[in-house]
Image 1: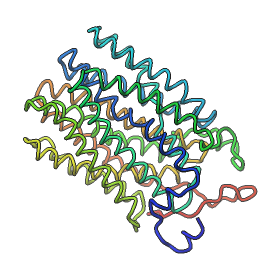
Image 2: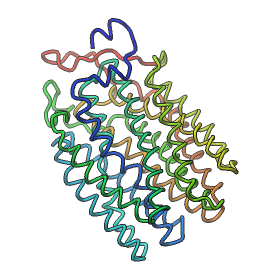
Image 3: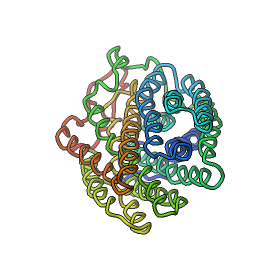
Image 4: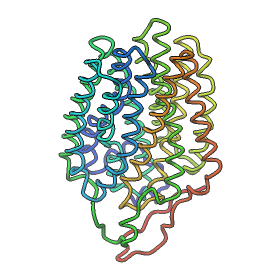
Length: 424
């Protein structure tokens, strides 16, 4: 990357995608992460159909999200220690079986406690493909000017899945059968997850790494103060995802146009994806900490208008704007991880952040579902506002803890030297 640094030019997506070996994990990684965007909305559609309650549907989805949030970091820690393939293969098999069991129980009108019991392994075994792909990028381009571009590219990829996934799950659930979305999620997880796991040549080194001392190898990502701050902040992003999913579903049911749910959520995700493309293409003069705070400020302001929307057109436009502020926050947070956490704990750090999003989503789905049942969809849209406002306050108070860890220490044989990064 020396030529890039010397020229001072901002590396673009084309240069990133020419990284040797990148396509061998990008394509199967995209297929494997697609089901993640289908899971929550698939559960909401199925359980709401069988119980006629958004509160019950939200509660089951919430159990799944909480379970994922609790187990995802452990999955990341195991991947750092034993390799991604060793974690992915059993996880994919357990997840597929758990989704099938949850679907069968819902269709059999099983009691709510039985759905909760099936939701626990469903969430715990969600394959953490996004963090694993990010860890592969960090292993290849970490410390270079390409790393922010890689973080932006991953955000775009994530959001593209959130454009396609909810639309696909909604189309299957409303057009074919309420269970079709979850069945498709299980099938895609099985096929995509095993294909990604087979790409063992591009997985990051695991176990002991040359040049790292014993303390670094055994450091938990959550022991880093900046990671804890980011995890709390990412709860706010999860509140937007969860609140939007339930509230949009309730809104389209209220107006008698349930098929519009996928379109509205697709517009929300499209705004996120378009902003992600722009963030990765711009040569920013401000550092990621400042962009993170500004992104949350814009997200809070946009979310404050959702509850007042009374038409599909207005809600679609507002959803697009809300989505456009998520990408800067996500990308800045994931970019900061590379400067905060040693390589031996990086996959775990990424899973703490995605787990925080899932936990925030779970809480938002539960609360928004209860509010939608009791007061209508407009009340559910208050959840994203509260979640993002609390996250913004946390970032404003603890911003100093996001300062990058020192990279100037000399390590044996020069290993561990990093290219200086922009801080603010």
